[in-house]
Length: 578
Picture 1 (tube, one colour):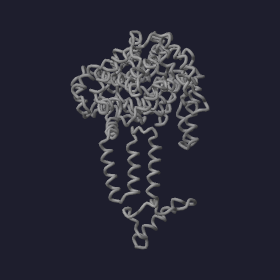
Picture 2 (spheres, rainbow, N blue to C red; picture 1 turned 135 degrees about the horizontal axis):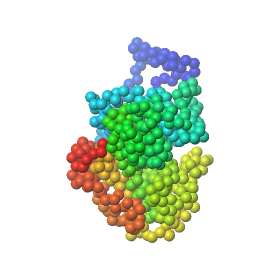
Picture 3 (cartoon, rainbow, N blue to C red; picture 1 turned 60 degrees about the vertical axis):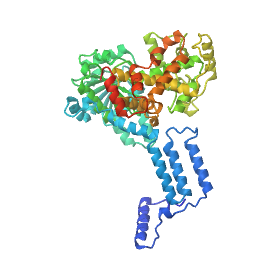
Picture 4 (cartoon, rainbow, N blue to C red; picture 1 turned 45 degrees about the horizontal axis):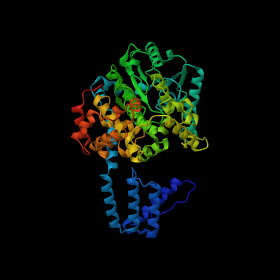
C-alpha cells in the first residue's frame, strides 16, 4: 500500500543500520536530494475491489459472530483504513473524524471510561485519608512485604506465595504434612521453570527468587513475619485453630489475613485475642495471575489494619476492593444468585451447553457450568454437605459429584475433557451425562407451569438480573461501598466483559433500571417454580427486586450519571458496615 519508505535487510548490526538509513533520509530531505512523500498525495497501489475484500475479511475475522460487543473500535479502524485507501485524502479524514465522534459517545466508550475511574477510586476510602492513622500506616507499605508467611501449599497458597516472591518478599510457606509441602514447592518451581523456558525470566533470577522461599511444618516459625496469609480449605474449625496458633506465634502488630472466600471473618477473628489485626484477603485463582483481591473488614478490624492490607495489595500490583463481612462477601454472594438460576433452568430441561452458550454470547468468558468445572464442582458440593443441604435425590449437582465428576481435574464434570483436546481444558458435550440428567428430571415434579423453553436472551437475563439485584441489596446493607466497587470486582475477578462496564453499570446504563425491574417481575411470574424448587433456590428472595433497586428504578429510570446514582444511594441506604 506504499506505507513503507525503505526496507533495511536483516542481519548484522540491524539497529545501527536502521539509524543510518533514517539519518540518510533526513539528510536527503534537508538538502533537497530526496523528494518528500506527503501522506495526502499518496495513492494506494491496490485496487478498490481488493481493498474492499481485504477489509471485509478482516472484519469477519475480528467479529465472526456478528455481535458488535466490544469490537466497535477494531471495526472502525477497518472502515478508516478502507476510506484512506479508496477515498481522496480530505474525505478519508472526514470519515475518520465521524468514526471517532461515534466511538466517543458509544456505550462501550462510556463503560471503559467508567472502569478507568472506578479502578482508581476503589481505594479512596476514609481509612487511607492523609493525616489518619491508617493513612500513615499505608505510607509505609513497602515494609509489609519484607517477611511474609503463607499457610497452605495448595493451588491457592502456591499462587499467593508467587505473588509475594515476585515483589521481593521473603516468604515462609507452612504446611501440616511434609508430603503436601514438597508437592506445593514443586508446583511453585514448575511455574518459574515455565517462565524461564518462555524467556520471561533468567535461570539466575529464578534461583534468586526461590532462594527467598523458606518452608516449615510449624506455625511457630512465622514469629518474625510482618503479615501472614492463611490459605487452607474452607473449614471454620480448621481456620479457627490456625488463627489461635497465629495469635500465640506472631509478633504484635503482624497482619493476620485469611483467604476464605465465604466464611465469617468475625468468627475467625474471635479465635484470637487481637481481632483488630485480623482481616480477609480474598485472592482469586490463580492468585499469581488474577488481579483482584477482596479486602474484607470484620466488625473489629482496625482502620490501620485495613489501610496496611490495602497498601500491601497495591504493592502486589493487584486491585484491592474493601468490602464488608457477610456470607460470600460481595463477589461470591452475587454469584450464588447467578448459579442458582442456572440450576433452576437445568431442572426445567435445558442442558449445560444451552445455558453456557447465551452467557458466553453476552460477553462472559465462560458460562456457569464451565465455571463450575474449572473451579471444581466438589467445592460447593462439600459446602452443601457442611451446611446440611446435600441432597442427590433432588439436586443433580450433588449426584454429579457423587459420580466423581468434579470437573477438569477429573476429566469429567458437566462436560467431558480429553487431554488431547485443548490440553484437557476444552469442554466437550457429554450426551451420556445429559441422558442421565433427562432421566433425573423425569423422576422430579414439573418445575413450573410454563412449557416454553427460555430463549437465549432470556437465559442470559435470568442469570444476570438476580445477580444485579443482589448487588443492589449489598449496597443497601452497606457491604459494598459503591456500584463502581462491585463493577471492579466483577470485571477483575469474574471475567465480566469490560465493554459492558460491570454488572451495575450495565444495569443502569445499558439495560436501564426501569426495564430491569419490569422484566424481573415478568420473569418471576412466567417461570415461578414449584414450592420445593423455590425453597431450595431461594427463588422469591432472588426475584423480588430489593427496596433500593425499586426506589432507584422509580427515581432514576433512564441511564444516568454515576454521581447521581451514588448520591441517591447514599441518601437511601440504611447504614454501612464499612
